Amino acid sequence: MFRIGGSKLGAVEGAFWILERATHELALFAAVGFLIGGIDDLLIDLIWLAREGWRRMVVYTRHARAAADVWPAAEQPGPIAIFVPAWREAAVIGPMLSTAAARFGDADYRIYVGCYPNDRATIEAVAAASKNLPQVRIVVGGTAGPTTKADNLNSMWAAMLSDERADGRAVKAVVLHDAEDVVHPAEIRVFDRLIERFDLVQLPVLPLIERDKGWWSRAISTHYADEFAEAHGKQLIVREALGAAMPSAGVGCAFSRAALGRIAARNGGRPFDGQSMTEDYELGLRIAEIGGKGVFVRLPGKRGGAAVAVRAYFPDTLETAVRQKSRWMTGIALSGWDRLGWRGGFAERWMRLRDRRAPLAALVLFAAYTALAGWVVMTLCGHAPEPLSQSEIALLQINSAILAWRLTMRAGFVAHAYGLREGLGSVPRTIIANLISIAAARRALARYVHAARGGPTHWDKTEHVFPEVVPAE
View 1 (tube, helix red, strand yellow):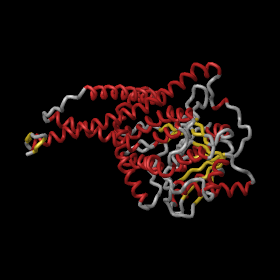
View 2 (cartoon, helix red, strand yellow):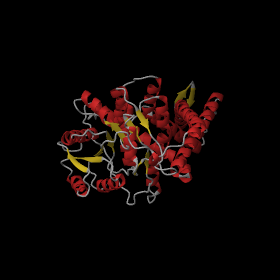
View 3 (cartoon, helix red, strand yellow):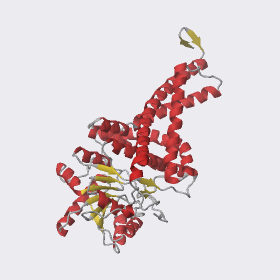
View 4 (spheres, one colour):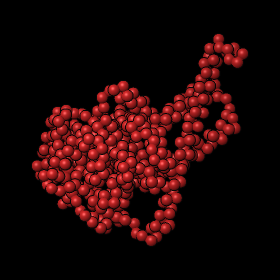
C-alpha cells in the first residue's frame, strides 16, 4: 500500500501515480527547455531574414550576385598547400586525389597526405596515385597511428616548412580536406583570392545523399544533409554578420600562412593542438583571438550553377553516426568549454553558448521522449493524465508554434539545397536526428570523463566511401 497525501493507494494505483507525476515533471522540464532553445533559434532566424531581406532589396539591386568564374584573379597569386590526413583510407584516398587533381587543373598547389608508418595499405594507395600526380606528396609521421588528427596535420605542417625552405617560396594558404571529399574545381580560385583579405575562408559543406541505401541507412546519412543545409545556409552567415569568430568545419577551409605561423609560434611550432578532438573548430576561434578575420563564402561556381562547396558521404549507420557526433560534442561542447572558456563580446559569447548547448539539448529531448512514452503507457492502460493547467496549455501552444516554424525553416533550407522532396523528408528525419543526438551525448560525456581522468586522446574516425560516379559541378 502507498500513502499519498493522507490517502491509501494500492500498488498499481501508486505505481501509476508515480508514473503520472514523473511524466508531468519531465514534460514540464522539456517544455521549458524547448521554449528557451526555440527562442534562441528564432532570434537567429529573424536576424537571417532581416539580413537576407536587406541584401535582396538593397545590395542585389545595385550589384550583381557574384560567381566564382567571373571573379578577378588574385592580386598576388601564390602556392596553396592542401593537407589531407589519412588513417586507414586506402579505399578512398586514390580516387579522391585523382579527382582533386583533375578538377584543380594547372592551379598552383601541392597536396600533402599525412600517413602513419603502421598503415601500409594507405601509404601504398597514395604512392600508386602519386605516380601520375606530381602535386601529391606523402608525409609519413614518426608515430604509429592513430594519434590525433591534429598530430597528423602537424606532421604535414613540418613537411610543408621543409619544402618552403627547399623551394625558396612561401605558401600562401593551407587548405584542409578529408580523404573522402569531393572538391569543387573553383575552390582554389576562391581561396587564392579571398585569403588576401581574410585569415580563414570557409566554404559550405553539402553532404551527398545516398540513393541506393535502405530507408534506415539513407535516413541516417541524409540527416547530415538536413543539418548542414541549415547550418551552412543560415547559422554561419548570421555568425559572420554578428562579428563572432568563424569556426572551421575542418574541410573546405583555407587558413592564411601568416595566421598559422603566428599560432605555431605560440605553441612550440605546432599550429594544430594535438590534445584537441576538434582542432579545426578551435583553430577558427584561436585565429579570431589573435585578431585574424574569418569569412564564410557561399557562391555559385558559375551563374545559375551549383555552389562552390565540399561534398562527401557521411556515416549511414547508427553506430558510426553516434561515434562521429559524440566526438564533435566532446570537443566543442565539453572540452571546448574547458579549453576556450568564455571570451569576447556579447555576440561571441552567445555563439559559444549555442555551440555548447548540444548536451543540454539532448537531455531536454530525452526528457521529452521519456514523458511521451509515459503518457502513451498511461493512456493505453486507461489511466488518463490529469488535465493541464491554463499556463501549461499556453506553454504547449507556444512551443507547438515554434516547432512548426523551426521545421518549416529547416525544410526550406534543405529544399533549396536538395530539392522539395528532401525538404519535406527533413521533417520526419528530425526524429532520427534527435535519437542520434541523445545517444551521442551519452557517449560524449563518457569520453569527456575518460579524458579528464587522464585517458589517452586518439583519432576516433569512421569508415569512408568515395562516390563511384563523381557528381558534376
